[in-house]
Length: 184
Ligand code: GLN
Image 1 (cartoon, helix red, strand yellow):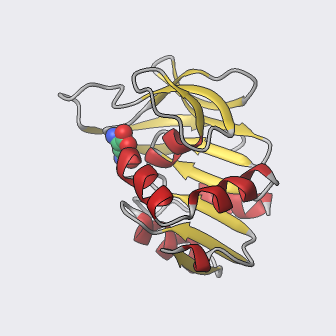
Image 2: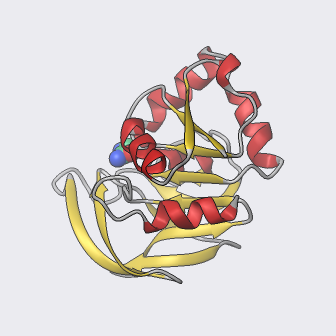
């Protein structure tokens, strides 16, 4: 099993370490030629505007979008969730747009840069969630809601895509990555 991890910017190393600890081969996606023979894809947190710009500049955007549309299992966290979203309520950009949700960027405000919260995830139980200048999902549309924190949707699943507002790669709880591998 070979998982591609978008490695242009942001928290990709942590995903790689976690997936490797589960016995998975990982490849860092840094240029278009890295995108081949993938069984899964991780879109990490970071800065969605920077990642979106680099994806276009490096001619990786269309290739990755097509793979997601064709059903490649995809785990997207934080900025990655923003890249997948079909609509961003406070930003006119749209990136892959393959996940039918509307997200709000930096939704918890500037004051609350980062926080942790334990909350229930469907089929998994309680999970310690780390939020870093996180988005939340304002409208989950036709997706399956996996978790809500204080009434806001923070995790969804739609076909081959899992979108999370928080960072499951920080910490040592590997259950979300294990669930993702089960999708494959
Ligand atoms: N605030 C970032 C953005 O808008 C997301 C933050 C993160 O990925 N931790 O892209």
